[in-house]
Amino acid sequence: MVVYADICTLCRPFDDQSQPRIWLETHALCVILALVEQGALHLCRSPVHDLENARNPSGFRRGWVEGCLNLSEIRIPISPTTKRRAEELEQNGLNPLDALHAASAEEAGCDFLLTCDDRFLKRYRGSLAILNPADFVVRYFQQSE
Image (cartoon, rainbow, N blue to C red; front, side, top):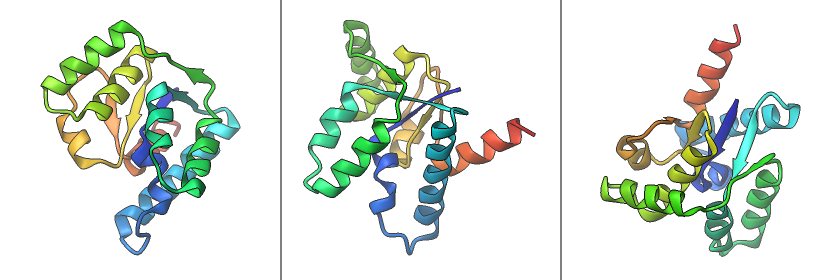
């Protein structure tokens, strides 16, 4: 199973952990990363990750995200097809970076796109299953029962 986690998902540990939802999504991310390390899941990386991560002013956070991304076995380039698809997704209401993440995940044939961004979750209309990390972990373990 191949998953694509956007940057807001990978940065979840740096958000306010006093909020139950954020705490839960952070722990779900830890489970997902453990599954990747065990080889039960495969993480996909695109140049969009690198572009967005490079914009983070915190060196510590950039390093954390880079470490997560280095677990990726699958790397997808940005092709002309990916760019065209991202433009379509933008026209349907996604912001440019979210559109590029989604188009990259689609191009890579990922099974799931993971995000903590409610706007992204609501506006994405495409071929991928899009979930927040907590919902993904629940679904993953229900399927393996």
